[in-house]
Image (cartoon, rainbow, N blue to C red; front, side):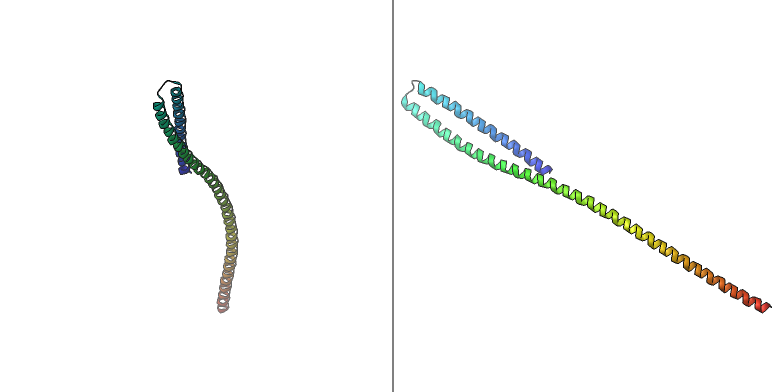
Amino acid sequence: KILADKRLLENAQQVKIIEKQIEYTYRLIEHKRKIIGRWQNDNIQKIYKDDQIKMLEQENMDMEKKMIDWLKVNQRLLRIFEAMKDREVEMIYAAERCKQRNIQAREECSKMQTYILTISKTLDEVFITNTSSSSITLHSEENESKQSVNMTTKKKSI
């Protein structure tokens, strides 16, 4: 986006330069027309006037060609500028879609973490219950063994 903004700024500056050149050309043409008008009204020799008029007309034609070229460049820059604006809008939408996907992924991740914690708790409870049952069973078996040893010992004593 920074690169696009930089290019837009450069293009805008180029457009301003071209507009100034066009404005300068218009002023130059107007000035030359005034000169031609004065010469036509003065008592200058006809031959000199004709040569000067031809020279000025040639300069005007050259300036018109330059203006046409400048207008073409200006139009091209305008199309580039419009395309860059369109791309900028597309980039904004793409960034927004990425942001939404990121939010959705976070929500799904949070749900999965909650689900994993629930499963983990359930497994822990089952494990503790099984361990307790095993422990109780072991203690019962130990007690039974002790009792039978005690009984055997008592029988031998009697």
